Picture 1: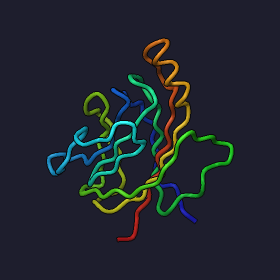
Picture 2: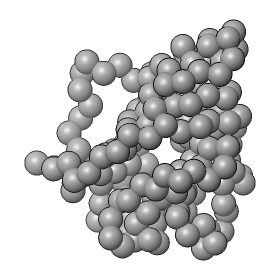
Picture 3: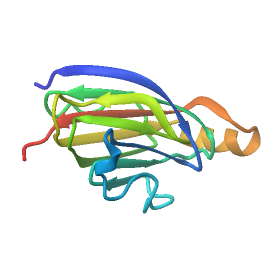
Picture 4: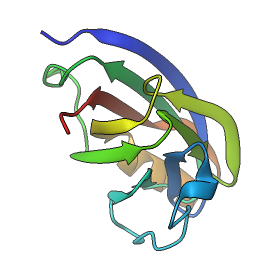
Length: 154
């Protein structure tokens, strides 16, 4: 059974419906954020980069990141994800920087070195953040994301 290695909670500033996790050493990336991201696509995967499409235009999303030593158990049946998807991302350093309106100070540490990582992403509060950002303006913590990473066999 997989074991949770570490977790962190982030407050990510979303801009133009988008934010990303990308290789911490972004000079090594062929396509840095936000280049070539497909607007409206829930999860865009590039080498060393994951782009996320948010339902709200400009707001602060709550993002929980978990790192597991193997594929995590299936999501709790009580959690109602409005969207979810799985992917694989390669990282050279084992660290992903958080990008919203600009590069944030937050870094997600996946491991001590680079490698291939599976990721399961789920989000909730999407319809509500869309309503709030259209009707009221900026929202804080309405949209919630869970990102679960685990090492993939090469």
